[in-house]
Length: 595
Image (cartoon, rainbow, N blue to C red):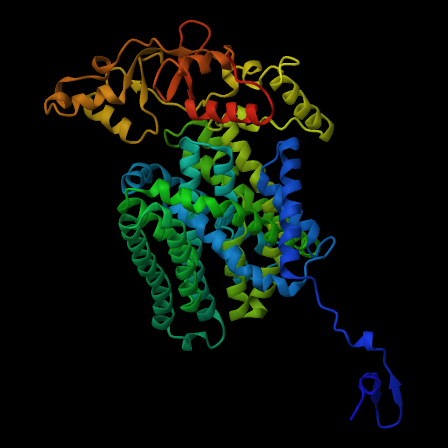
């Protein structure tokens, strides 16, 4: 019988035909890569500190998460094992799916009808200019006709995850924000459809391409888009019905299970999952009475998945490709940017679009990632000779668009007046030393040893928390126009203005609701008849504590803000929810509430 010592000696001796090589037992231990949990921990920790830094630097958190991942990825420290990406892929795709679901919930049918007349011309103008600029430009820079058309098609796509995360983070709302959401959706739908048609043309133009069945290619396109639509329709209806018959305590398991199932079926049947979840969102918002609660349930895990998505996505960015794409890559970045900006400006200048839409809608659409990368990978798998260099350009330039795109989207909603200025102010009061001082200051203040510091809400002015994107109801508007305005508003108080935009009264929903029962109201009543005197108004120079005290006296969820100088014209509104968020931040920072 072999002893233990003999066994160890046998294991340590590796015989060859000529020699015997002595190997230490420790050399037989296989070096394993770091555990997947360690990778997730590193990504989340890096994203946490990057998010704190973004607040100090007043940058979008998306940019911070991307940079955090970039530092951990192949371009810098390269600490993430490549085999871990395949395990993280389901999480990143689920995060993207939830973003597309949320994007779909922004389109109830009445909303689609209302903005389609403005959005579709803007979208067509922006996409035509972008496609033409990029196609002609890169062709002149040396790309083949097939590659040029392919790049022009991929340039249409806008990153839905990046753009929508910035809009939700900034709590933006208004005409520019609504158009951004709509154009992002239209851009990606058009990019998928045009890509398949362009690829069909490329196949027919190749030698022997006429043997390819046009009917078969079109059938493939119909099956892909039609299958995604049907799966999304069924999934949305099942989700709405299940939420109607189940208690809200079970919704989270139900919704995550449904989302995972739909994602798995999409991948198994090779359907575009992003389109599937976009349709799910549209179906749910039009068939369920609890859409807001459903999105809140998804938000409970969506925030974490979003951090994972952007940090993983950032770690996959390759800075080396940015240098490899050279002049063509630089031309693609410039031409795509010009196409979106000029396209929106050209159409908006010929319509009644506001200056904010003309100036800022185009720059808000520059982020590019998932859809363009996916389509370029599809093209490369079909014909590496034609699409290989195109994929390199997309992967290289995505670094630029993903870093600077969120900055421009945030700037767009801020300068359009659809993001409260207070959201751009750093509220954590920075350094570790000052944070430690705040902790002890609050402790001493609670014990009555010293006065608490002045709350941020007492030092700020109304102009820093108001939303400038506001429309009033015309004084001579008939009852049907008033109802239409109310249906598409998120408030319960509506300012009525004269021809000079001076506030002549306020219409409150609870009083307006009483008029809904009079069938003759739409013929006789005007907005001025429904308004009450404007007793609750704010001015930009007032301290925020005045707004807080005013909201304590009323149940209104928003108050109109008028100019300091006469005539007092309507310029903005202050929302109760924005003030509540500000007061919560004050309390977390250790300050007292305003008296």
